[in-house]
Image (cartoon, rainbow, N blue to C red; front, top):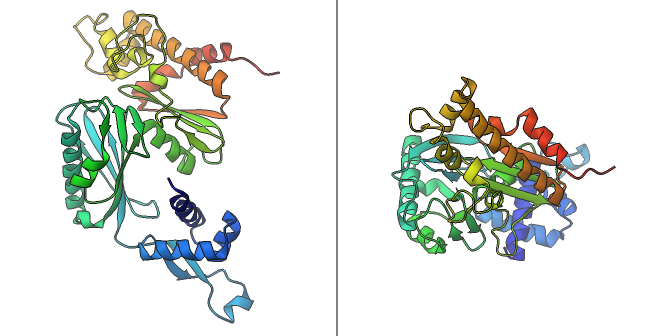
Length: 354
């Protein structure tokens, strides 16, 4: 992101968090010159992102003269959309510019892995279906961000590897331009969860925190000193691929002994095939229920996954010393990963500071 785009983003975020803000307020809050603020806000108004309103909180001395003008996010018909590409479904969330939810939409995926162009076409069709249900058109879509599992350089929209794609090293940018009706961006899904938690959720106000996602695989979003950490290539933080066993279980990345090969849904269910009396457990929920019903082999499997996960968390704490670790995922996928036993294992393996 160049300096001009970064300044636009700072100004836009200042207005978003303030609700309304005058140009003077923005200049003081961001330590930008009045000329810079005027230039940036003019371009944002021209782009339909913000609008001017008459301030209602001006002091009496100001009210007697020229009305004080404030800025807020535009209340027009444009939307922004987030898409999470999962293993079996694609989830779509449509928001207006001030973050108010307009609609949610979910569509099944034809297959868990697709050719890159086929996935982009599926995204286009899902967007069209969502907007048709809204009684609207894609002309009202201002931008879309797509979350994928895998190693992704967000700035260049380059996917080194993703479990959702049949090919490695794919430049998604040209496909987005070819098939989608608006600017489109792609990022690692755990990074997007971390950013959402920082702006709206459990990490609001925190400077150093981690988000661990547990779904089909295991992901990690790292925020250090208030900034998302990406690594030199822009695709660091592959927590699911730290090694927990030499020459261990095969991971979907092609390597062996990765954490997610034991903790992620596919790893659990693959190992569960050896302990089920009926062949395989169809879902993690069924595996958890069997353990609760007294299946000792299923319970042992979940306990082992918890031990490996706890060891991984303690390593993260020793490395990053975070204020908080946020565990994200469906309850039936993560319930066995934050038990009292797992948390005690984490404490026992963390280097304590007196």
